[in-house]
Image (cartoon, rainbow, N blue to C red; front, top):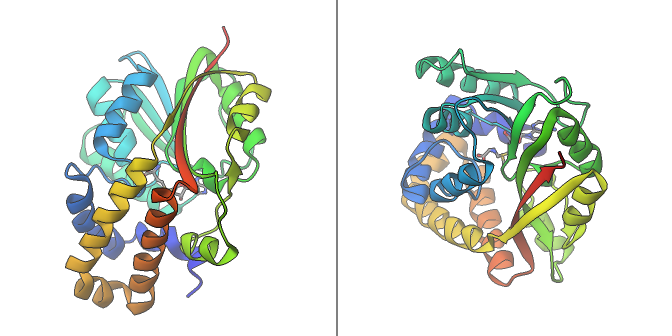
Amino acid sequence: MDLHLDAYDIAYSDIGQEMLRKVGEEVYGEYIGQLSWMTTEEYRRFIARLAPTADSHVLEIGSGNGGAAVYLATTTGARATGLDNNEAGIQRAVALAKEKGLEDRVHFRFGDAMRPLSFADGTFDAIFANDTFSLLPDRIGLLRQCHRVLRPGGRLLFTDPMVLVGIVTSDEIAVRTWAGAACLIPQGENEHLLQLAGFELLSCEDLTESVVTVARRQAAAFEKFRDELINSMGQEICDGLISSTAMAETLADQKRLIRIAYLARKAT
Ligand SMILES: C[S@@+](CC[C@H](N)C(=O)[O-])C[C@H]1O[C@@H](n2cnc3c(N)ncnc32)[C@H](O)[C@@H]1O
């Protein structure tokens, strides 16, 4: 199996979602469907920074199974649109919005964020992307698209868990990115690209500690559910999960690969 092609298909399959739920409840306490380093407490802070109201329309890029968009719409009353290039994730997200009775306010669109976004200029009041931009190499193209589809004064918050601040070997990168390709970016470059795309940077928050905490809890959960993981997903995936999570913890703990949340605003 080529995991570089199939990691998200596996994650958003019935078996994958069932395992992620079990692990997620151990890791995040309040599990809202995330497949990332984001704790739910952290997400509440992100939402507060984006400050959506019941009149807002928020775009989430890399919306996965829809858990985060549904949470945002439920807790703020805002409209939400999720964009993801995984068909299984989109189907799951649409079903979740329907299950929660939110299909009028929460929509999901299949699409590639590396292509021009299929939304009109100034459509959104806020854009959110958690642990997704690190998968997308044309960062400046993406940031320009975000700038275009935001209304003047609109906010963008994204996290990047692949900010390089120390020496990392090619072997370490191979283990860390076992589940799929990702881009390393030198510290300062996201700030530079945000400015080039026309954004005003409001804040940068170092969230590397979330990676350490989440990775440690994941390691404990993988141990607890080891037999179930092997039975449902196979030895190869189980081993890959364990070693890539351990590598993420090491690189974050040693502050070689850090995770930053960027909050920016489109000038009025
Ligand atoms: C690490 S997961 C994060 C999911 C979610 N944001 C979270 O915090 O749980 C990255 C998500 O980005 C999506 N993705 C990857 N490449 C993409 C692309 N080119 N366009 C749109 N979505 C993409 C994946 O399908 C996946 O759902």
